[in-house]
Image: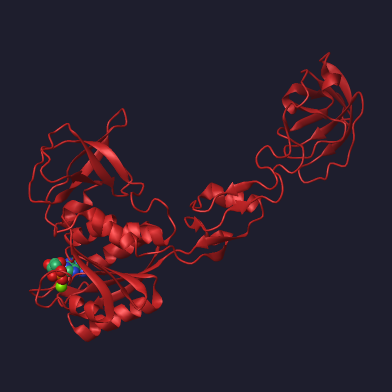
Length: 405
Ligand code: AMP
Ligand code: MG
């Protein structure tokens, strides 16, 4: 058996961020920038008002209340080609450019109109120069790098890109991930099962995990335990995807042809990792595409995805934190746990936060790698190292499973 860190390093050293592409702004949410983005112009690009009110010369308001002559109105979007002089004001709306001669804005709530035609206003507040004014470059200065390469695009960043006119940006494309199930026992329909059959759950799970992680899942179907069919499926996956995930056929069974086929058509490493569940794992390259062979038991395939496939796919998507990931937290363990079998255990746990926000985890039930129902009650995997006697109340590391806790 090898430590998980060795398996992960093996995988991460053999996958690369996908070749950047220029992608339209409406398609970049969640993708990673491959180039820095610079602002051509300052934002704001012109002096403007932060409030609806009157543009004034601050010195004219010194003896407030005062009366000023209203010389015009400026709306957002106007070019603001207006000037005010001593004793004058201009009606102005939020975002509109400040007129020549004005150096402050009095908010409308501090003013009163004096006649129907609105050409005189009573200003009831004295203001300092700069009051309610937004100056050029307060948000972004011209030439500034607004986003660095390697950042993931969030909703706010989509807006920032739009604000600097970057309607097409260089990003690492979203990995297309083929998902393949293998096994003669698998059925993908609601018809009654005959003895020996089970329904294919892994492909549904893995396609969902791929999608939840922000990647594009490609359904490669079920390959029977037949070498020709398995080869066809892997080759089709390699031809149409950036990576292929298969489940099943990587352990020690007589009909585990996945191993035979992949050894023939790919450059593979078969691993036994010192973890429970998800001990068997394979990584290799088929027709230039990374192939990850996950174990067949549903819980094992999920844990294998979390610990190995997701970091690999995140790395291909350009994320810098691929190895550790954002989901590793500390939690108070609610159970006594001890084992010494040479493996690190990933214990399926329900999690809750107490009133001070501290995370507590405790076993979600059956820990068998075939017990998917218990896995679905888990919000986290508690990481219990070999030989560590964890006592109720001890702090442990845990991996959050994106259940919203
Ligand atoms: P294998 O590694 O192919 O021997 O599979 C190990 C166990 O996982 C067996 O009990 C399989 O029936 C089960 N298994 C394999 N693939 C799937 C799948 N796609 N969905 C549900 N169970 C599976
Ligand atoms: Mg099988």
